[in-house]
Length: 302
Image 1 (cartoon, one colour):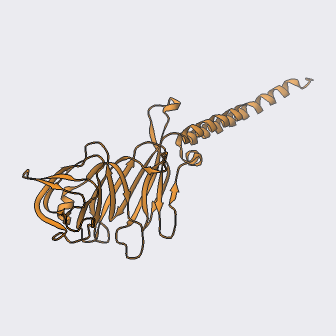
Image 2: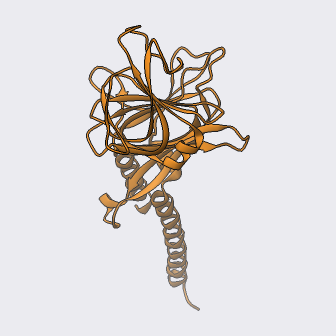
Image 3: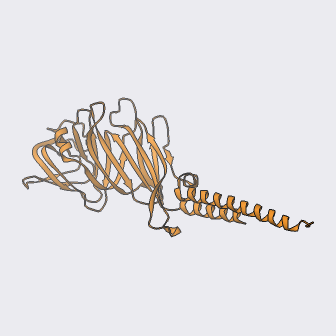
């Protein structure tokens, strides 16, 4: 009876684990990162020379951070640094080229910048900030709460893409089995390659939407000597999945954990199976010894 009981217990454990909310960790070296801020403390500060490129009325509808910072599209202002608190729903695109120049392009929401000396600047949508590698690296990590999408769709002459990266699906285990507090266990992992775009999604009524979480990004020098953004994003615990778009595919590759991943990678289940195997082996030895003893008692004595 011990064998079917063990199998039932493991089956129940796997089913319960597979349906728990998990988190996905996404990291990449990329030259492009899209961010949309959620409610929270999204405060950035940069100390160092910066070009503030305020989008003007001329050329309305033309919003491209690759344009030169100057008339007639932009008003160029050199400032010694800035402080900004991003509002909920504001979206940015960060670009880094191989020379280390970093551009922060403001998509849809105006922002209020303050120079280090306290001078305010109203920055309309379509504006961008440009800084050199020394200023960007001195600023360190730009942390954020919200959603993130890494890389741009690959294609001919595309320069804003992921160089490489990785992902991990982490599952909290043990709490429902009274074995202490939650421990995050990596149940699925993989690599991103050049040209991928990656986003963490969750299901909604009208289809998948970007999952919220927290992350950070910084300008780093790569092993090859050029520069890229080093970005990490951790989605909040939910029933999420990873969507990876690659050149030549009409639909994204969906990476979603399942019960097989839980079975093969959960240390609790693997440990339980090892203990159950030992228990079954011990029970078999005990049963064989008992059977031999009973057989010897049944034999007639001379």
